[in-house]
Amino acid sequence: MIKNLFLSTLFISVVGAANAQNVEPGSFKCGWNTYKAVTVIHEYTFSYVLKDSVKLYLADSAKTYIAKDSECVMSTSFPFRDANTFKSASYYKQRKLVKSEEYRDKDLLNSKEFKYDDKGRRSGLIEFNSVTGARSKKSFDYSSDKSTGEAVVTEVSYVNDQVEFYTKSYYNKENQKIKEVRLNNNNKDIVHTETFSYNEAGKLKERKVHFHEFNVTKTFPESVGENPAKCFRMTGMNMPEKPTPATKVAFLKKLIMKNKVLLSDPDCKEFEYKFNSPDCEVIASSIKGSSNKQVVFRWKERILK
Image (tube, rainbow, N blue to C red; front, side, top):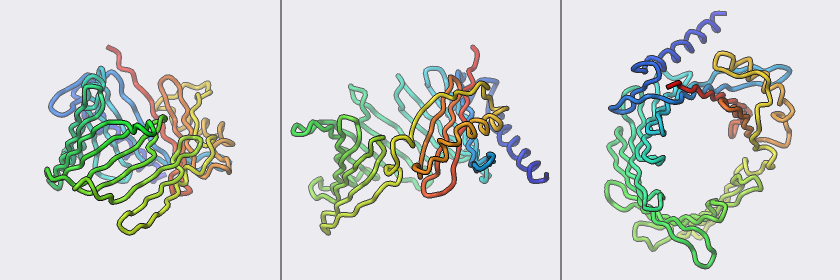
């Protein structure tokens, strides 16, 4: 009883903190400016235990404000066992991300600025770490391999205006990265070559890294890629009830029990199932490297003009 009262009080306080940041209903501050939100996404992450019934445990919650034309998107996260509040602000121009900022409470931790070429491809990235004072930069160039038809992205990485390394990444027609070649700062000596293979569901199955200096190859299997395609799918809710933040716990329990066979498939050591409705998305998944499972409830609140 006391524990439940404590959890309820804590949850009310973090939700109250999210609402307190509004300048007025439907508005939010992003950087120096105030924006009018057209959509607010409420997100709650639970860990769950599925046996004869469902038990849910709140892990964290978040609220995301989206301005018209996604000019600014601000997300505030409230980790359940952390006294700090974390915010991320993303600024868009013509639907392209041009700047992002990360905060812990009111302190700016990190900022990034993005540039694009005349074809709309990302051509540059400048990042500043406010905690360490480090400034890094990346530039991107695009070409194709005439012999294979693979797309090639050449990246140059700088730290404090000094070249750190070069990277050439190769992509197939499905836009999957199949090879990465890392060169040192003279753009000649190869540090390592990494190759990637995927399963039928498009999930990464295995990575192989060849270290040229030592002529050694190491293989890193990815457990997600060992699972069949049926372990990753997207489907409709198929529930008569209309979910809301107020009814989320009862709704999630019903949704999980209705799909108990799917979520308990012994062939799926790791899985991710997305259930969608017009204003809601539920993602049930396993937690990598753990026997725990989690379910994410996202609900879109449309702001009337």
